[in-house]
Length: 113
Length: 109
Image 1 (cartoon, rainbow over the protein chains, first blue to last red):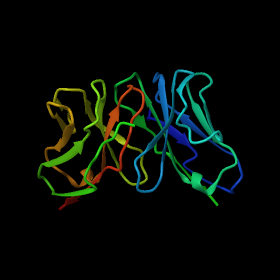
Image 2 (tube, rainbow over the protein chains, first blue to last red; image 1 turned 90 degrees about the vertical axis):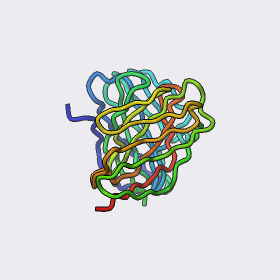
Image 3 (tube, rainbow over the protein chains, first blue to last red; image 1 turned 60 degrees about the vertical axis):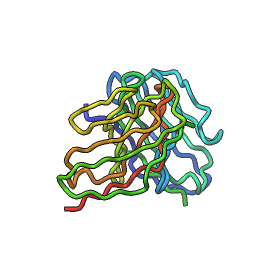
Image 4 (cartoon, helix red, strand yellow; image 1 turned 180 degrees about the vertical axis):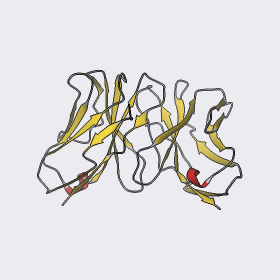
């Protein structure tokens, strides 16, 4: 296992288009997290899953953002009708249980033009 | 949100110890304190975490104040590879981390 994998690494899209990012966590990690990071800021929590259950989604930035983890393995983050303000690094992390270290992927950098 | 305050930047000479401070005056009794570091264009990397007692691992030590309102990450011998942004984060639910803006550490050869 090589760690948390995110795809794509970079995405350029036109304003108004929908985008979807994929995250493959470390095997057997039942917790999966999504964060957003803008330039010069620390990561901002968006949502997390325990297995396939999305247990916190109130911090998703708007109703244009949604996330799924249908079989408790990989997860997707979708942004509909992208705006220029959505340009950021989107990070995924996983952990085996609560109150332990989280392992982050290298992120997907989104640029909305 | 659980807030942390860190200096924006610090410098250290190579092979000298580094003490990175963090204030978290609004911490509650169940908040774990985590430290992560991040290199440019990479995701954060776990460094260390603790609840009340001081912690040591192969990367660093974490000293937690008795009242838990502050903590210090200690790198015992800074190397050039330790140059990064260091984040002190609180994890109030065990399920999410609140990152601040971090401390940018420069290591001088």
